[in-house]
Length: 411
Image 1 (spheres, helix red, strand yellow):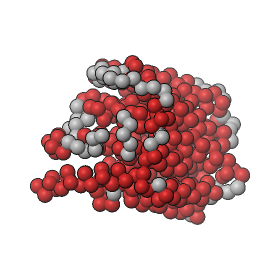
Image 2 (image 1 turned 120 degrees about the horizontal axis):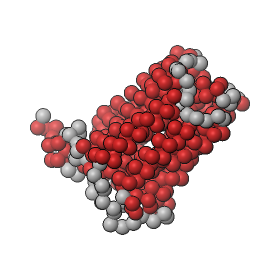
Image 3 (image 1 turned 180 degrees about the horizontal axis):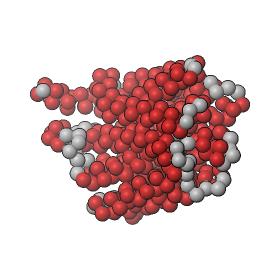
């Protein structure tokens, strides 16, 4: 297995931002794909009002989306190894265009939930393949590629709520049509500017991602990320209902949150990994996320806004470090490891929104955040109990430090 960042001379020569056109095209489409995660945040109250649904019913928009995304992750490698990465990307984009547009035509919350499930299928096909395409085409090694991928995630997550707020101010249906239009542009760019990617030498079996989870390091990373994602999506899915703000207000809050996600992902995570090591960064980020969730639970309106936005910092750190860990902690091929890891971790995103809103409706708006903090504590406990299975990450961190030391001395 080749450690990430194993091409320091190439990385130094080309730089993080000097990438082939195919990388930027794929990254742009990835930004739009990740917009779909936070797009509905500002319009959740409007959807509930327009379709006469309860918050817990509307939360199923996230549940159907991420449940299908999680299951479909097991299929992406099987499909892409047979039809190629470019065709898989295009198939995923086409599904998102169709189901995002259909979401805007929904006449009931049940229809919207169903269309979001179809959207999740397309998103899984695109997102999982996009990471593999970017890693394969980017200069500077896999570390640079993952940072670019996480930058796309952060930019998409931050602009999604803003787009949802701007278009949702006219009508809650418009953000869905806007996303379909942007994804159609991404489809055209991928179709015309991305060269056909070669098929892998060996075809991926449907069972390969599950088999990969038999590796103790990958399963530790995946199940830790499951509990982290529960806390993450508690904030994303439930907070719009307690902010008591307009679509513009909610969109602004989550835009600020998303900007911090992006900055922490791209700039904060690499620095902290070099100084503390990957596992310690996960400990720190999970502890901060738990602290901010408790802050939301105990605060008034202003405090909820502040702690919600600040939670973007540990979320950004976690996103980058968890993704790198999943890629490097086992000897499984990266696409296979990514599929198994994402299958487990997206389950947290699937179950959290419904459970959080149900608890908030039945008990108190503070309860979901206390549960999110508990999930962060459980994730830290898993890391501590199974720390020996993550020893390879320490070796990767040391390798990075050795490669970057000569570069730092030159400056």
